[in-house]
Amino acid sequence: MKLKILILSFLYLPLSIFSYEQLEKDVYKILVYNTHGLPEVFINDNPKMRFPIIGDKTKDYDISLIQEDYSHHDELSSGLSKDSLVVRGPMGGTLSCPFCTGSGLTSIFNLPKDWHIEVESEAYETCSGWLRGANDCFAYKGFQLIKISTPNQKKFFIVNTHMDAGRRDSDRSSRKIQLDHIVSAIEQREIDEALIVAGDLNLNSKDPKDVLLLEEFKEKLKLNDSFEGYEISKKWSILDYILYRQGSEVEFKLVSVGEDESFVTEEGPLSDHPALFLELSINDY
Image (cartoon, rainbow, N blue to C red; front, side, top):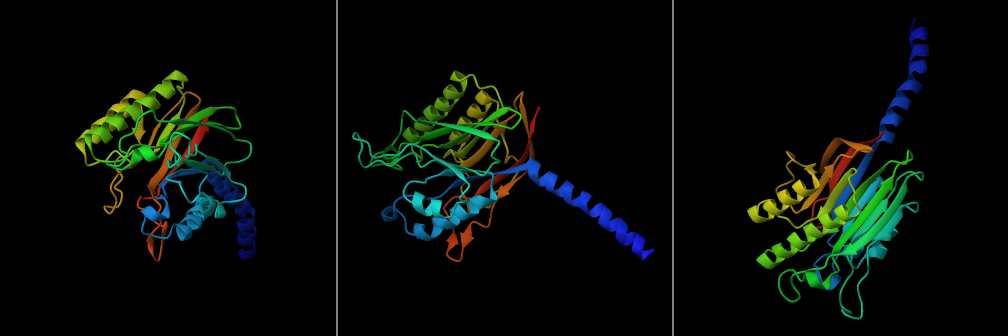
């Protein structure tokens, strides 16, 4: 009898492993993270220590949408998987503004090789603050528009963005124009497929005027907040978002959302923003 049970156990074992592997294959993890990557002269911590660790942690994600990758990209790259596809946004240092930094946007992909990825970058046409506010005009903030085609040739889109910071009315006006820029870019390309808009929107969840801008933006693009009903740790200001909508070719099924609390060392958090993640299955019809 014991022998029979043992034989049956071995017969069922491969089936259990296959089911687990199939589940793992069908679920994809997306990281959204502002890395606090200003030049060292402006920050009081150790980016040369932090950024290789951040890079290493992206290995756990299929897609990582990074903001503030301004000055420590080499350190970030040193921790990445050698097979990662890395697309960095436009750089700064133009003749018109030799001291300006780039967009700070970097998207990292660890997707299967039979997935096709195209990335366009656009800079926002407005900013608020040279020597006041959050000095946003010294960065070419904007967004990356990412088109992803599955092996079944079905497509969906992702926007990785970092918007104007600061709490002044002029900063908020810039954020409104930047949100409208994203809407215009989506509409001009006649994108009506599944869409994720994520990043540091700098829309404070406790500021009614910022919340109104967010709700108007969501309505224009028919977006849902994947973190609705989820409470992020109270130590963070809520400025980062992962918004999404369904499409006719691709449907997202949310598996889980949360904060990856492993983005810390003995010295503290790896950034001044939470590391947000979204796990989803991608159903392409």
